[in-house]
Amino acid sequence: MFEAISGLSAAFGLSGSAGLNAYIPLLVVALAARFPMSDPLVKLQAPYDLLSSWWAIGLIAVLLVVEIVADKIPAVDSVNDGIQTFVRPAAGAILFAGSANVITDIHPILSLAAGLLLAGGVHATKAAARPVVTVSTAGVGNPLVSTLEDIVATVVSLLAVVLPIIAAVLLLGFVLFIIIIIRRWRRRKMVV
Image (cartoon, rainbow, N blue to C red; front, side):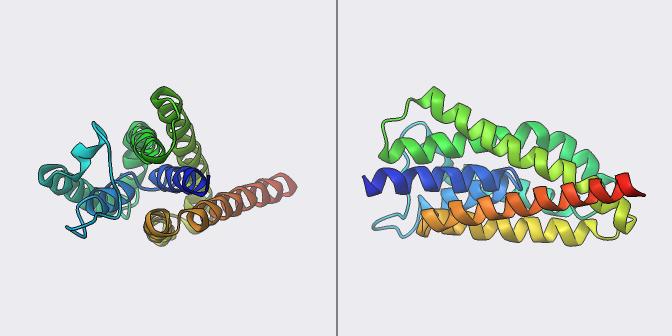
């Protein structure tokens, strides 16, 4: 029973962090499925085991660098978020299905849908918060917020592999924090 809860927590943590940055949790899972060589931290079943191939790891690493750089440049970050509207939910679906099906018997379609909705929801929350940051800081705060999102995605992804239940709780706390900020900003905007 604990393994099933742990697997679902890992799936939630990884797919949720994909809503912030698709490539960080993909790279974490790909590397965790490769290392340590004798007994990898993550065991992916087919077809998800393709993530741990060296060509996939190289491609994910290149895409991660592009994502990190693009998300720090004002105006380019908006275009990047538009493109990532399709990539992040897809990555979340793959991560949820790949993580949950290792330990549980959840149907792959249900796992893909759950990951798609979770990553899409986190991305939508991020996309709603970004204009608030842009307006309130004249775009200067965007690189700082983007860096914070990358840090949260990295920490949650690593915890999802090592301590999955804590990762799920941390991700939930971050999403609630963003929702509170958005609501406060909207209330202040209505008062003014």
